[in-house]
Length: 580
Image (cartoon, rainbow, N blue to C red; front, side):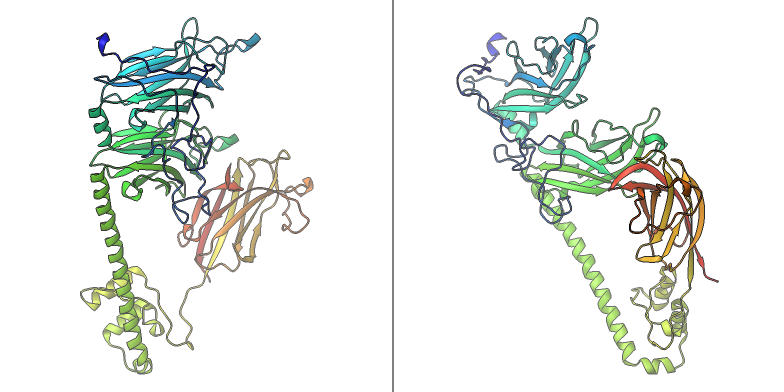
């Protein structure tokens, strides 16, 4: 009924004398982060660049908007003077900037934008402004909506007016559950799929007392996906064709996804990366999965599960999580948990129980170390006598497990029901041992390692076609250095095999691919890099010792340069065998 419609609150339009709106700090930003766009990592002065360790979280919610609400408090005239029996939302569309052009671009023919504003099943539109990529609306730009409790999203979409079918220039969503109530807020939202465009709107949300009480009794989680690092490549790798990642964020049955960033193994999301969840009592963890977009079926680049109890209540928490099945890749997110008092107490209990389990495990480990020390002390007090006496059957079992009479004392003690059960467990777990008698050398097997540098793919040089060679060595062991010959091309095939001098189990390998400037070196062995040479570094990679010892390695390594992927890969083989 018309009588139930609230009066329009007084608004001051641009150019009108009086108290004008002011742009304030957004609570999605940390303190002092003026002008920080959504998705940009917040600086907390923490060494290493990733908060969550020393230095604390990346900031707290603005005191002007407790609880992590989005939107900047502002003044746009006095509070609306009315009492309505329904919740009411007032929206004013101010303008947009940096809209993309969907028209011809000839003779000033650019996009003709207008804005669609939708809440529930009600949709309103602003007038169309012809040929303007930075429009400002001053007329017919104010709308009001009656809000039901189930209405949670205000949808905004900038459109390009055409004769036949209008095109989208980008969209944004505002969550009513994150808004400040009973005061004007200004939002400057980056448009999803808007190529950097932003939309400027003012909002006044006045809920009924019952609606406000319902909002206060919800546990809310605000998530911003910042970036991923060192993602694996599941595409061809040729001509820069690498994975096209996007991130899926899921809590309970609700799932959101970021936009796709093409051909980037270190993506950073700037828009479409902020999500709001209502946390149910059964929700205990946030699931994040990075996917590779394909024409047929998307591939997983790794996943992570983040427990909600790790997040500090009513504070921004920056979390860097290693992706499972991601081959060393990591995901970085910002999270703000606004729990109800009941949820807060329950999370405190869960954190206490987790801490109790960790302390119990630590106490068990300390008790085992004490037992080990007491056993070793008793044995060493009579080491001479024990070495001369004939060994019992049980001691012979220990000798067999440990590799000889000189190595019959393990550095740990197996806790089992019987000593024989401990011996059987020791045989399975390959215990580390200590030598009691220095005059007898410990029994150990010598090993040798060989490496085969097969070739590289997708190399790129600033000087044209690379004249590439590869250098391999064990860190801190220069005598182990191996160098291939020089081969022209962005996909050189060296097929060079060599023995690694000075190798010991556990040693890692490093590989560096260079481009030599001298053309006459093609097909010849490249000289060792030394002072004065200016060979161009095309990329480097490393192979951890546990990846090829003892079972060998045959695969591709991603070439990195200054911490970022080059899109190129290196095919290597490494094997370890007993020395003759």
